[in-house]
Length: 153
Image 1 (tube, helix red, strand yellow):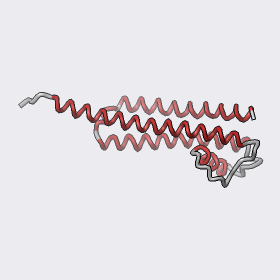
Image 2 (image 1 turned 60 degrees about the vertical axis):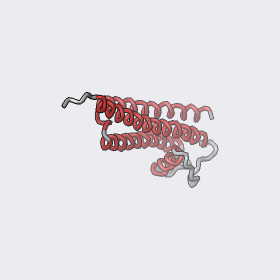
Image 3 (image 1 turned 180 degrees about the vertical axis):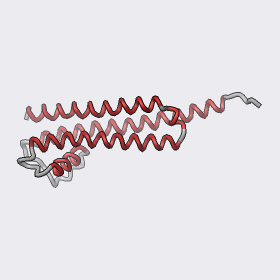
Image 4 (image 1 turned 30 degrees about the vertical axis):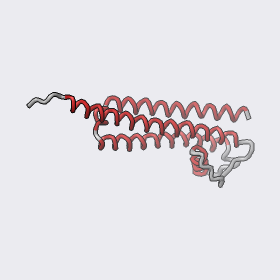
């Protein structure tokens, strides 16, 4: 049990690092190009790209879990990488269909992955909310600046 908990903890640390790196890089790009966020059509592009980027990050994180399952559990319970990836997606998202389950000796690992998924999906949701909030503030502040400008006629 302790070994699996430590392996799960290590995977959580790795996936959080992947998410933190992706977040930091994306936020730096957004700050550098923040002038785009004042317009609605640019906000739409930013939200689509942000969503796609974080979906990609989640898929990478899920794949790391699937690789671990495949290396540790596959000879016993998971027949293919596709099955390990599917199990990992269902576990990470806490969907839990139950069509594939792990035996007692491995189930603690899937519980740790579910907690990891909740954490990182919540992080992504918070980031999307922050981007929307920032764009709204930027839009209103630019409109306010336009209203405060003196009439030059």
